[in-house]
Image (cartoon, rainbow, N blue to C red; front, top):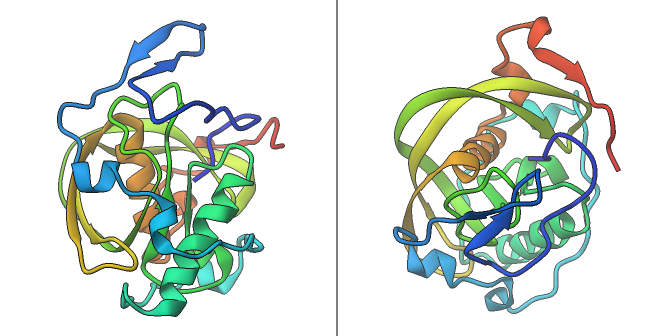
Length: 215
């Protein structure tokens, strides 16, 4: 998932406060973090990731449901590291799924640290075989995507979700309850793993907009 607009403003540590668009500081919820996930680091994968090419619509892999993965498979562990590396060098990118690098697999990387709409934040992590098991209260919000670089769109998504998945390189099942922007980003990436783009969820052409700046 790419944030609408220009630049990558995810600077700073996995902190408790983030800057708003007006330069103010807003509190970030840490009370209900999954501590296993919040303490996870890409270094635990034990491999340095490569930067991969991001495919763009209408590439057929983006419309293909990803296969369930074995999180202990060395190929999948390497892919997890590659997703993080590619996400980090892509301006404005807060999430990247395996289909976006041409691999139809149920895996994605996420990091909403520093985004002004973030409330609950688990920092950077990668999940395999993630599923939304609970959601509530739909709200419309603007979304962008690295695989749809020329457009953004208004998409209705749940504002609070509970998601289960497995950390790569482990058999650790984690359950995440989160809200606001992290919840939206999770749903966006899970859609990618199921062969859906945000364009598949907009209400119509009137809810799609040319991206003004993408750097």
